[in-house]
Image 1 (tube, protein in one colour):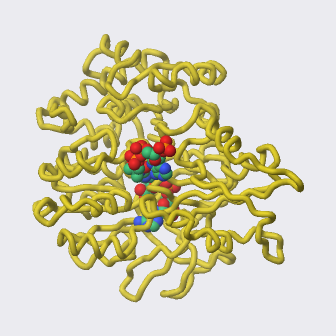
Image 2: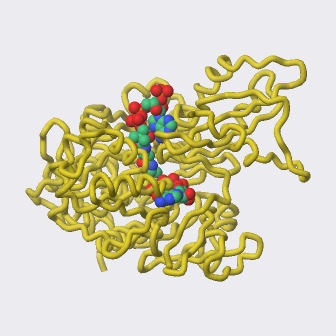
Image 3: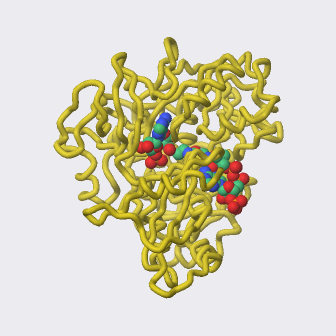
Amino acid sequence: MMANPLYDTLFGQHHQSASVFLQLPDGDMLSYGAFLEMAAQYAGLLSDIGLTPGDRVAVQVGKSPQALALYAACVQAGLVFLPLNTAYTADEVAYFVENSGAGIMLCDERAKSSLSPIAARCGARLDTLNADGTGSFVQQAAAFPTMFDTVPRAETDIAALLYTSGTTGRSKGAMLSQGNLLSNAATLQREWRFTSKDVLLHALPIFHTHGLFVATNITLLAGGQMIFLPKFDLDQMIGDIPRATAMMGVPTFYTRLLSDTRFSKDLTAHMRLFVSGSAPLLAETHLRFEERTGHRILERYGMTETNMNTSNPYDGERRAGTVGFPLPDVELKITDSQTGATLPQGEIGQIEVRGPNVFQGYWQMPEKTAEELREDGFFITGDLGQIDADGYVSIVGRNKDLIISGGYNIYPKEIELLLDEQDGVLESAVIGVPHADFGESVVGVLVPKSDQKLDLEAIKTRISGSLARFKQPQKLVVLPELPRNTMGKVQKNALRAQFASAFH
Ligand code: MCA
Ligand code: AMP
């Protein structure tokens, strides 16, 4: 039995290793050994300030090696890592800190003045960590030893809390255990053939499953390297591809690369693997990519609550428009959303999954957990799917009201609640419509109270204080009333059809 399975497997094996872990944009190389020494100092500081195993560490900081070392430090000290999108406003962050009862919150210096009242109210300590690796946290950590006695943990202990918005508008913290993360990393490393020779081009954010767990855990397990970029930048990506062997991205990465003529067969000839996920990859993008480069993108399907569930095969046909087969240790079934009964092969229904990847429930929300996680271990994903005669799974729609823009999830309910509160607004409906760059983009439909004229600019300004920029409707439109069915339910399909060309 290992003392701390996640730490020992992902990180512990690399102690004192001089092998390169991160290649940084300024040309610097960070070895595994140096990375782990930094993490040990952070673990020392986190423990010294009184955090004990199971305590939550809320982190809203720019992407940097230091930010990633915080993840390692939390695992080593037995703390629960809680990463937050850097786009969230102080209002949004307040909810996460309060709901999780985080003992410490780390933020960029620039956010300190707006977050300190929140930290004070929630009884959380506040420290800074800037994207350039400076800040009060690192300053204090420098005084701590570069070795830390790893805190024992079990596979069932929670390693991370990742918030995912809900259809009711309230975010839920998905509790991911050490075993959840470990099992999925091991499966994906094997399925996608990652080895210590791999160099992964990493331009995803590290506050979500895709960039944090899928990309990073697999690299750590394999002992490979990452070209660690602060964000997606087309020129930088094209400049770095020659040094990489693999890339992971959301569909927007692929459409942007294809929009540039420098992205060619020659540039990518040496590449081993391109993976796409987090949002549907259009079959057309898959085919254009193959025409241009000769590579077939490997599409996979996952969720915050489950890590990865399915993947197209490494060897064998990667079928455009599908997300491939259930991973070896994942059971997947298509069920009737009313009765829960398994449907015959080929029929469309809700996707349910079970396996060692499936989370432990929502933080302090037993009722929400019971609604989505069945007693027999099957998790109701809210996605609608179909399995073809060869076993390939396709996602054909969603049973949940969700918009995915550039790989970020946006829950209409959260925005509607805010729009409904605005001056002169009777009611609202928020929909996602096709967008060439982001896949989907947000349109807010407003119905004014009788005789009122809405000031759309004033509304935009007011919601911008409380809602992350990527969630804000890119267009607000006014209708005299919302289309409803005979049951009184808003017909979002009709609205989506009406505004389908809003961004063309
Ligand atoms: C940025 N903006 C966006 C988005 N990103 N608007 C809508 N949707 C977005 N996704 C806005 C900014 O607010 C800003 O607005 C303007 O676009 C430019 O900002 P910038 O940061 O320069 O944007 P960008 O660099 O072009 O970013 C687009 C991006 C990025 C590269 C697609 O959003 C991204 O890296 N997405 C990946 C998300 C991801 O990792 N998802 C995985 C979730 P303004 O100019 O008006 O101020 S994990 C998951 O879903 C599951 C588990 C899974 O299966 O993986
Ligand atoms: P999140 O809540 O951020 O974990 O997002 C998970 C959701 O992203 C899933 O429930 C799907 O709706 C969607 N998703 C992830 N991967 C894919 C994919 N390859 N194709 C279509 N949808 C996807």
